[in-house]
Image (cartoon, rainbow, N blue to C red; front, side):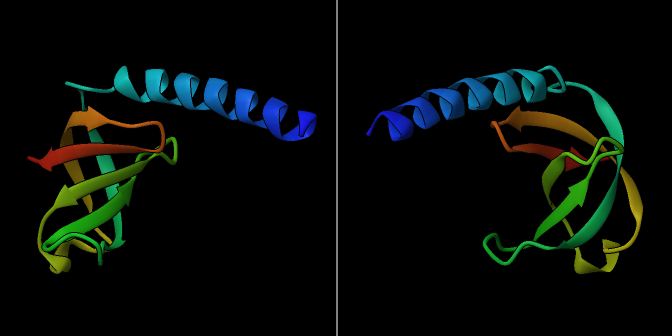
Length: 85
């Protein structure tokens, strides 16, 4: 029980720190590599920043494997969401 409680505390702290780090990217423009189609979102693509953060955008599957510029609009602890420019 104590182990699980301590683990939950650490996870909460890590999620907060990750979210804060990702939120600093909101409003910035970065080049990302589109690495695949996101099956959970119609017209959704996934990509990676140069620092390996996961990015979700809307776009055509033909962009897979290409570098594109994205403006970040939203962030969670694990992903950034943006718009292709």
